[in-house]
Image 1 (cartoon, rainbow, N blue to C red):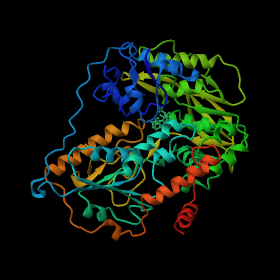
Image 2 (cartoon, rainbow, N blue to C red):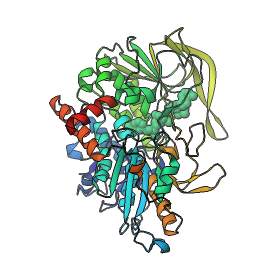
Image 3 (cartoon, rainbow, N blue to C red):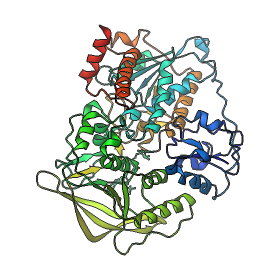
Image 4 (cartoon, protein in one colour):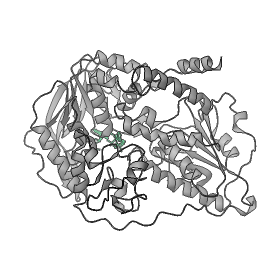
Length: 550
Ligand code: NAP
């Protein structure tokens, strides 16, 4: 018997140090960790103790005898990963002793840190700071919205509630007496970065990457051509996207790009409303999707099955879905590769071959490979999308995308551009204007002249770009916090203004206000047998707060 890691794995590796037989890999110290789609348990090493189950923040680990039927393939997947070279022994965990305090502080002044943003990378940075033995640290989390959570609340798909339990990291941080939340405060609008820098030894920007990337093809601006960033924000109840108009009258929608965001969007567009009605999807999106005529979503990837950006765990989950059919399309003349040296890639190819042989279902997600978008068709709204057939070639020992002169137009009423995320600009924070990651050295922000800016740090997607899964941000935050602590120990960090930030932003809401909103949403959810019913508009949120204050 063994334990098995399943789809929801967030790669935060909390399970690694608690495993008495070191059988969970890749560990953060191993080279494969940076690119691993998930972690795996070696069935030959597992002694079935269940220690990993207790610490997994997203409930991704089960004993093999407890696996649900739709999770059965993950047992095979865990086993197969170890068919590759055996992993090296695990290094002992790093000491969490703090670095020496600066001499002039005498080690008594608390380290004051502001974290901008409240998503997973902010939570991991705060956790890491709070976990330093003997360090007196005060943290203020500054968040633009009244509802914290960032990607967990507004990015993770509503049908992935297990992944949303990663939000518990933030909830725990916010329960600590040395942590405050300043909600409804936007840096660049209500505050200057300089206001923060004067009051805190360190300011960590964990502002993510929530802006869309453009395709740069004709027709991209037609009504019905929507960025995945907007659609995801719409169905997750982000106040900025509540009024988005999503045309769902045509029976086909096309998603450009085939990363995990593309799969999330396709699943949500195709899920039966009664399934979505058990989630925390925003009510306005649920109402629209109840009337939706979409029955086929074509997910178009410009390269082949081996290069596709989605991860194998997400493909397994799709194949096991009872609610939708999976189809796979390759242009004529291209065969599904037979085999691959990487055992997990081999499994992916087997799964895709299995899907190719399937017959129709009422709601179909169609994975279309080797199609590069050329033009979005239509006069005043989307009527289709033309894709050029591609081939993979090899140049300089690397895969290379080649265009052919064959093309096809897919009729549809909605095109979703799921081609990655860019960083939003934070006024006053030096960063490239094209939305690419903030320049940094081990998390220390580098200014326009190429010098490190004392006291300014970055973590998460703003630092690395939009890649990895939620737990990848933990390792990233650890690096940034190590830099903060080293700079603190070297006496490089100082505070020039001893006044409380609240004197600049007295309108800020605190964690108690968030608790009122959270409890309200959960209570509404209980009444409807849902995890929560989201309050979307800020006016609605303020009404609830005003009602609670009376
Ligand atoms: P992504 O994984 O980087 O995928 C982007 C997709 O867009 C790729 O298929 C890419 O194709 C395609 N693309 C880019 N430019 C294009 C162009 N000009 N024309 C056509 N296609 C283009 O990004 P993502 O899906 O937004 O995901 C962001 C990160 O969040 C990823 O690390 C993802 O795994 C993670 N995420 C994870 C989950 C989960 O674990 N459940 C859910 C959502 C997101 P090429 O590959 O050919 O460049």
